[in-house]
Image 1 (cartoon, rainbow, N blue to C red):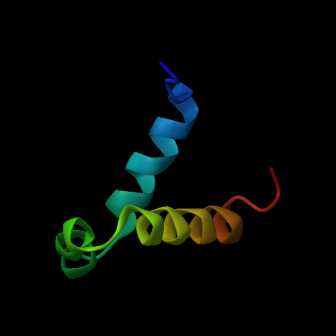
Image 2: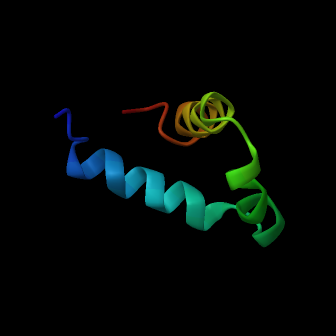
Length: 50
């Protein structure tokens, strides 16, 4: 099984916490691909220097 690195899990949790309640509530209605794209874009913007 391919388990994500703990740092990756922490980043995803931090991203979800940064969403507004309305954005967070809408996540289950979105396709996983869209959620992954949202996370990837957020990560590029906020962690571009890593």
